[in-house]
Length: 111
Length: 113
Image (cartoon, rainbow over all chains, first blue to last red):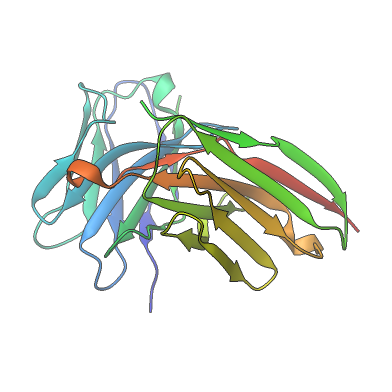
């Protein structure tokens, strides 16, 4: 019974490039969440999605960031025109109810 | 927005000692979750609490959901070296259809053999 899967685990991008982070939820889970973690900090909520719907994007920056969870395939967090301040660990979680289970994260480094 | 104060920020303890950490909030939550994160990994769910006053155990871990719904604590008994890591509390208020978790800043636990 595979857990939440994220890829890539590490991603290096130059300023101005695009970053695409992928997340496959646990089997049977239809809710996906994205969180961002800076060093020495807790996780900060970004967006909550169900299949083909964004339910809550109150934590998402208004520009350059977007997320989707299509009918088929993984959820994608997309960051356009990355800047140094986007460097962080991005975690995806999935759930059926209130317990959220996290993936191993994608560590994005912007050079 | 909701904020969680987690304390202590870090702890150094001897192997075999008991550990206690807690979280307080300025607003109420419906659910409290406790996670452990190892370096380079994602948080792993340890305990979930759903009712005010609830006391739940998972092996050497015990957690409680405060009566006021604004606080929770986690105890670890008889610590061992593999307990090393960062422990996070997280609160969930599922009103208005949102299920976003609010995290504390973590308690970094070091166990001295």
